[in-house]
Length: 383
Image (cartoon, rainbow, N blue to C red; front, side):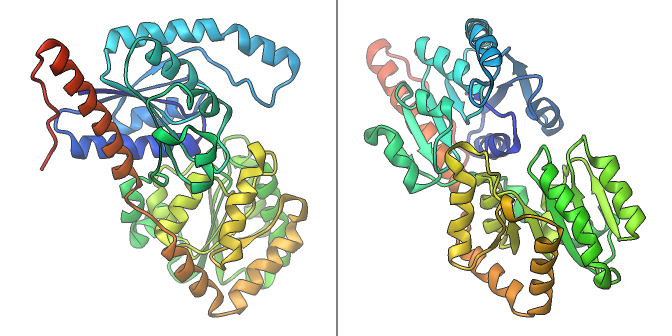
């Protein structure tokens, strides 16, 4: 069976895609998965490390850009469709799955035009531009949140949750201490602003170190900064004499979660799916420019029931952040209670549900082919 998974750009799209690829390999004996993305997206670095084939199209985003860049991106649409056609003709996939991001639109649309079964998965409460358009064309839509279902045709939209990588639940605290060079006797705060980093979070944490000075001997940081600010943030920790491991990107994310006593992060759908599956206490700082403000909507769901703390970007600074960290450290039951509530929200079977939809669609295609041509092929599902 040949499957194309397309999309990416950021971890919010890419990591659910990887979870689905691995679930496919575990479920279907002859599953052959190829990714399609862009050379600028995170997928260009991560997918080869994961051992999957990846192809690239020339595509750019259309949303949130100035007039000149929007026109330039529109001019690339025919090119991206042609690139997609070449890849689809070469691979001849049985099914194409789009996970969002601007590389998914041309590939899924071209696949539909060529009669290839198509599915999309939407991670956020409010669908992105590509998935909103594709929802009317594809065979099946899978969504993370019940609130998303109203944006898609009811007869083909299914609530699955957001797939997480199985290895996220297999992190090792001991391995995390060792691989990230952390002290076993200190309270560990894991900071990350998504796969590309977040400048405002980096700045606020740097400022917070001044106010956290009395706790210097008791806490330490694991800080994913993104590529651009790694060196400057590393220098701030050094000059303030705080214990901290500063990295541009955490490839060993499972161990990073395992070693963390508290997390400071954005509130993307994939991040929240992983936090709840792992049952981790967090201070969430929603990205204020996310489409339809979906990150704040995501974060408020957890905040309202006590599963996380939340700081809006407009309120974020070193003082407010350090005050919240101190409060959590001084209240012995606060972090434990957040972890308990957070864990009740976690789901680890979303990948299985999406793969079941994919296999169901392929089964329908196989039955139709059998009826019209006499073909007797079948899907080899692992027992």
